[in-house]
Image 1 (cartoon, rainbow, N blue to C red):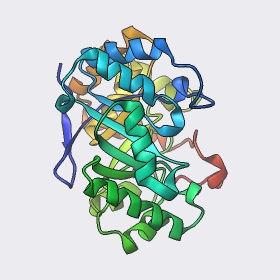
Image 2 (image 1 turned 90 degrees about the horizontal axis):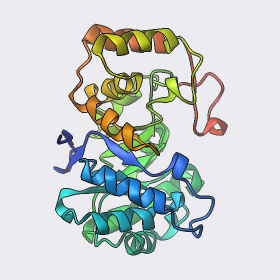
Image 3 (image 1 turned 180 degrees about the horizontal axis):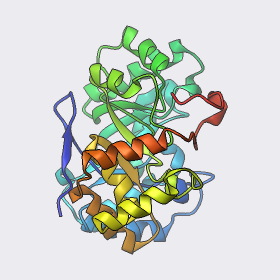
Amino acid sequence: MQIPTLLLTDGNAIPKLGFGTGTAWYKNSPEDPLSPQLVELLKAALLQGYVHIDTADSYGTEREVGLAIQQSKIPREKLFVTTKVQDGWKDVPVALDASLKKLGLEYVDLYLLHNPYVTGSNEGIQAAWKGLEIVKEQGKAKSIGISNFQRHHIEALLETCTVKPVINQLEFHPYLQRSNDFVPWMREHGIEVSAFKSLAPITVGKGGPLDDLLPSLASKYKVSESVVLLSRCIGQNVVPITTTSSLSRLDEYKIATETELEPADVEEISHEGSKHHFRWWGKEFFGPDDRS
């Protein structure tokens, strides 16, 4: 099964489902021992068609991604590899070179500024973004984007950029739908959305109004609740990044790319989800009722 793609404003196409190497695979230190389990799982994912692999320098998993790619023997041009820069934002070209060395690659398909808060100011965001523009010009990053950016961060970036970000990867699920038309506003500026924690209503955010609805919809479509949530994302042209430590889940998640929910069901998920607020990442940056 081939995963469908979303065309970005720079002309590159991103697979609509990505396999992430953060969360459960996250290391406390990049110097922690290599994880053979992750290498094997990544190889299995690659061979099952998960050609979109998402990592970050702060996850400490770039070496595993590189080994899995090498051992899979899948041609580089068939892969879509994303990594992110965080602590190295003051010298992005050096940070990317370090990531490329760990990945064993000459370029990444997508390079993201992992979060705006680490830079400390709008000027820091703008300076870091200049670094991403440089590595794109060098051909070391085919596309460049952002992660965990709020609207005011993007506005600051747009004031001085010469190349706009093509995507913003952020927490997005029915309990955090991003208020104030944030998603449509980003798309007006050519910025697509990638999502982490898409499965929050059935994992870290259980106990909300979707606890009853999702099993019903899963039964209706003869799929799992995970597939329902991932399909909702994909149907909205939001690119979910998901992960697992289970081989059986790999087959399950791919079903989402060929499952189309009826508009009324998508609306019901959104409506019920809007009754409850849950944020997993970055709570310290938002008020308790801030859904932006």
